[in-house]
Length: 404
Image (tube, rainbow, N blue to C red):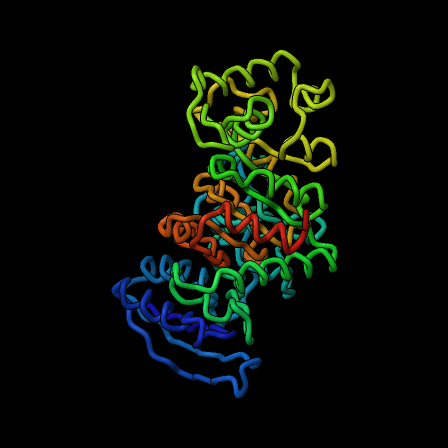
């Protein structure tokens, strides 16, 4: 039998973190004994549980400890982290520590060091100057010192928003029966708070934002200075441009909702014209694109990253067709982001969630409840779901922040 003592600290009862930790232990075929349990006396006080975890062998215990750390259950015994050099570019040493997006610390020379840029599914690289960063596999180089094993690594569990706000109950399962007006008002206030403290707001938009007629409200938010970074795909940008040049989205008029003759090719025609000019910015500059989200981003100097996929028509010349390059371009825009709005997007929302630290307040808005829950299911513990029509949500949000 193999045993390790772990501790988990924080708001571990009301957020169900402790229950998740204990379930993980049993589901792995291991057992536990709670050695000590202190419950915070007030809602602001953290609780602490010390647990002895027992497994049949060391390998099972080691795998289980990695899973438990994703929920903030860290070994009590303090030892320095072990590092091994990468022997090939883009290849990690065996036994490398695989990260979560939760706040993480690494113990080096008897001192706990904060990991600078928490991101899930990366390696931890100890730098010569004593700092520690996460790095995706493809950005690790020969001789980089990569943390191996879980010794000397600790993870802080995520605390849900607390207090009397509409988000207090959102730690529960996502529901379509939550007061949307109150939630939109609270999202608007979170955005204001972020801006007051110098934080940036990121919008991740799917094509449905245009199809539902909500793109003008996003444009209003960009024009009002409430959106600092935009992530999307070829589809969103194409249909935003199509709607402002030809008045259609996928060939359907946004005013009357009727298909137009030959409208199925409208998106190809605008892609072709933008490609003729060389970039979206050039198409704005010569007057071809007269308005819309992409127009406002170019006009206001708001950076955008368009990530491509195998389904893309064209694509637009600004689209990153190399997915690794697209992810790196997204990473470059994330420092300083405090609030992320995932708007009617599944693939780009999940891709962005994979890059975001857990400390970024993330709101996933979609009419489909399954889409809203996918983000959290894939490790973005901080994501809060709002099940509603994205058009109504954005109209209401823009009225709160950027009245017409």
